[in-house]
Image 1 (cartoon, rainbow, N blue to C red):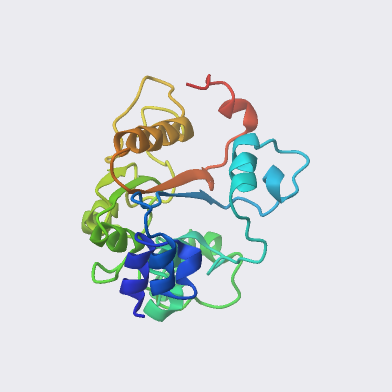
Image 2: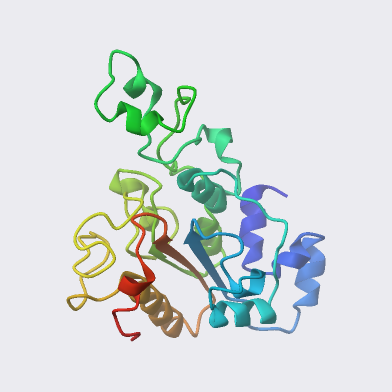
Length: 261
C-alpha cells in the first residue's frame, strides 16, 4: 500500500488494524456508522519522564494520565531527530526527515553562513555545541508532500491545527496550505518570540490577541476544544501543538499567575 493510501485509510479504519490488513479493518468496523476521531497532541521538548503516566513523581498531569489509562502508551518510540523541525516534518509526512534533506531546525545557520568569510559575532553562539560545520538542509515542508492532514481531508475529515508549526518561513508553507482547514497560531516561528511571548498580545499573524495577559497554552487548548465541539457531526482530525516546553522557557510561577479559564 502506498503511503498516501495508508494515511487516507486511517480515517476509515482503526490504525492498529491497518497494520495487518485494510480489508480486515473495514470488516471489523462494519456496522459502525461513526468513524473514529483523532486528537494528536504534540508537546515540544517534553522530557520522556515529565508525565505522571510515564513515571514522574514530581509533575502532576492527571488529565493526560487519564487519557493514557483509557488508551495506549508507547514506551519504545523515538523522535526522528534531536531538534524540532525535522521531527515535526517526520510526523507530518511519515518520512525520515533526511530523505528530503531536512536535518536541522528551520532557522539554524546554513554552512555558508558559518564559513570563515561569513563569520559574525553570532558565529560562536551558533557553533558552541558543534564540532563540524552543518550540512545544507531544506528549510520548508514541500507542498507536493502528502501530509497526514491531506490524507484525512481526502477521507472527508474536518482538519484543524493549533500552535507551533515552524515548517517554513513563507506563508505558502503554513498549515492551512498543508491539508488543515483551520490554523490557529501556526506560522514561521518556532516560539512565541513576538508580542508578549506566552501572554497576550501575542504578535502572531495566525492567532488573534485575547484579553490582555491571556495565557497562550490555555488559549490553544480552548481553540482546540471549540473546534472539537463544532465538529461533532463530522469525523475530525485535530492537531494541538504546544509552543511550550520549548524556548523561551518560563517558570511555573509565571505560568500559574493566570487563572485557568
